[in-house]
Image 1 (spheres, rainbow, N blue to C red):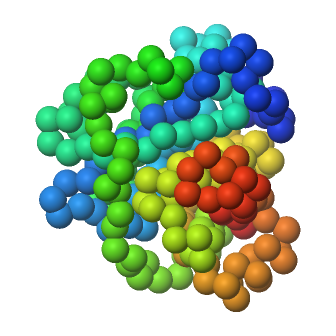
Image 2: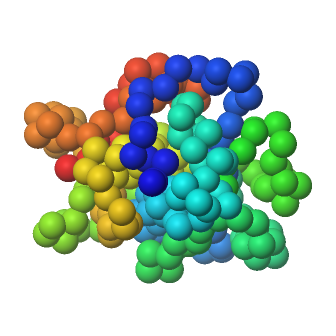
Amino acid sequence: MSPLAVRRVPPPEPDGVVRAMPVVLRLDKPPAARTPVLEAAAAAALAVCLDPRAQSDGEWHEAVGTWVASRIRKIARRARGVHWEAVQALPGVTWTVGDAQVRALLPGPVDDVPRVVARLQIGGTDLEPDEPGPAQPGVPVVWVNAALGMSVGKAAAQVGHASMLYAAVHGLTAVPAFAVRDAGPQQWREVLAGDPVVVRDAGFTEVAPGTVTCAVL
């Protein structure tokens, strides 16, 4: 059984251990465009949860299940060159969209991350807005609340939350090709009126607690 199948609104960490999924964005010089980076982040986070190793008889099940049963925190970091190559040796899934790559790693305690991850920078993940055009018909779209002005690192974590919640609601067993699009004020109101799956942020960084950061239709 997928850990997402038993996803509920979680209480604070019952054992007092704060866990997070490291999400590593490959940001070379020049970096990939913002939209494919976020689309790869959405898919990579979900891919870890749906991986056979995360199922009930898999080697990742305890780590993923314990994390999902609490608050699904993610911490996005950036890497390139040898640092990007180094994280490929850690348990996780790399997802590619166009020339963008993101590796979502096995979640664990935030105060006990591997050295190759700890040395990666969390800040500095801003990318210029791009114009990806309309999403393909039939593809789930993760709409990002553009009014919040989230950094790319914060947005990457939020779209990863969105893909997981969408998969839990719809009982997905495979990772779809998510589209990610920014929604201005009018578009955002229309999206929310369509009964989407929404992400309400806990408010640890950048936005106030309870802020709806993303919505999936």
